[in-house]
Image (cartoon, rainbow, N blue to C red; front, top):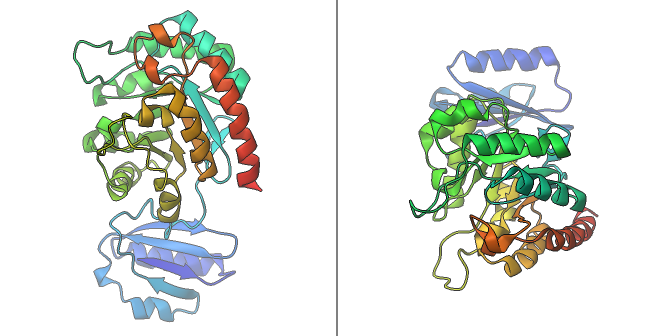
Length: 334
């Protein structure tokens, strides 16, 4: 249920209403906009007399919310969320360029790529230290050592780091990571999501390869209901009957998610297609479609990459793509 207050309601009366609603055992989320205040009621609202609330002189209207997700529902939060990562802002008109290798391999590799993508316009560095692999025989990352190499690259470039967490037990290792990524395979690892909800750190939540948008939002709800509202959604392709690319990039998910939620939505064209030459056109399409950012794999030597070289752009290719992305952003933002 949401309660929309009239314009210029005295603070004292607003606080009295919130206190009264809290006495009913409800969790209250307040969104103060420029022209109206929206009070979201989370919990068992069957005891709330809608007619009584709506009759109050400070209340403009009362509406029931049928969707199961509340914390991440745009009806509760009309204004876009802007997630801040150091000096970088994501969402609400701010665009994030996240780039780097699929896996951290050596100090020279990650620092070289970090410097190259920053020069091209990237403002966050991605790199995998813990890698979920389909085959148990594939390279699964340098783990803790990889995290330390990412920190070295951050020190060299100033770029905040984005990397994937797979296991609750490893959370202490991620204390100095700027953005924690939840990969597609862990989107419905609810115990992990609850623990991430206890952190004061941005969470990049990737859509599962066979999950609906509602399921993605419910996973975000797990994080937010536990106290962490700094969630970034990522569309990274879903598994369909397509037989020429790794996944099908659901670009229509971007505007639909923007209708449903106030959370930023970014796109990963690298994992969606699995083919380097497909990444630029899909990145440009995602930008034109209103995405709040792109996360793209870049490697200085894709042929010899230990992970996902086939979908990785070379630094010079990323530079050309980034220039085109910025041009499209001018059109989208105008």
